[in-house]
Length: 452
Image 1 (tube, helix red, strand yellow):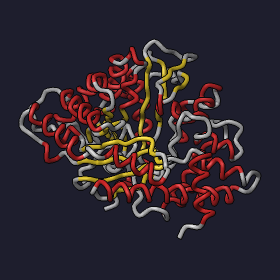
Image 2 (cartoon, helix red, strand yellow):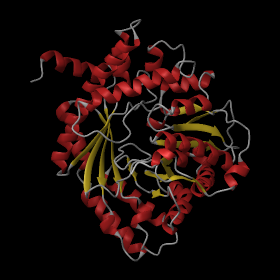
Image 3 (cartoon, rainbow, N blue to C red):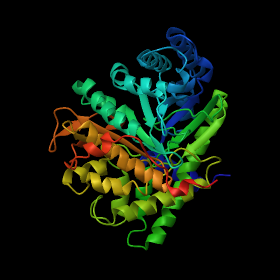
Image 4 (cartoon, rainbow, N blue to C red):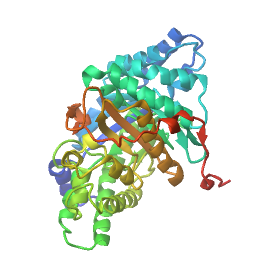
């Protein structure tokens, strides 16, 4: 039974420290929607989404009212479209993205993910079609999100796909130039993508999942920051213990919401993603947690060590609080979505190279980073390859979501609005990697992949 002290503490976390459930994401299998014609496929997808998710937003709002816990987003993830559309005969999957967008707006969700492909070893024809469709699809839709997995610890890195994704990111930026390349904010390139991720832009409903799943992503950087204020000057093992205890409390809120959402939607409960997901709002920053540990500024010496402590402690604390943990689970460092990261990048303390080092010990990777619009497709591909190598060698999920903003250079800034935030244009190393990217082929899987 909950004690009055615990109830008051949770209320304080919500009211004063910006605790929220970042998303309820309903995963929907579209495998049964496969058709031999494009129009029939689009109709089947629209009907499946609007029928299955018709109550999602209402249920989320009811849970908010019942428990007093803010639920920031309600989202949908679907089976990777390159698999669903494979037999449709379509030469472009843009109509499929448009059908997804119409269905998602009809049911009122914030985003829909799964306009995606799995291409970690080779590119199938359907993967090629989807990747070629991405720039136009992301320009023509409002809330469709996309991901492409180009590598894994078991398969190595598909450098042909990496090269294509460099070009795709560049073209997507050009097609959405009038909106500061917003299309690129809805596109992420993965290594070791997970199938139960509730967070956009990388959410998709994996082929190993059932027909439905309710996945919940919790947040709460402000709660962790507040808790650490009480242990200033104390040893780092006490810092870790404080983060663990706080993560446990945050995750219990997510578990409660997930269980209730699953019951009301009549769908199986999937996972709780333990990730600390920041926002541009003051008091909701992962960077500020690291600075509370004693760093002068996020990005300076000690940042990677502090982030490693935070990421590990979040996982240890949350694991005991949830029935099933999954997704990405850790600490996110999206530059444009974190007030402290924005400030650190603007001051010059946080560089692209330091962010790459930080991704070795945290969730995901180089996320929501605005770079000069003049950055070449080959350089973007090389950035993707570097980040994929970190994921492949270390058997962890890494990703790249960079935004080359046309007409913008270092010293400029860009604003995307909402949870996507704003940030300065970050410097990219001008050294070229064109000949390396032009080789294509595949970087073989590491020795550690041979575990059978």
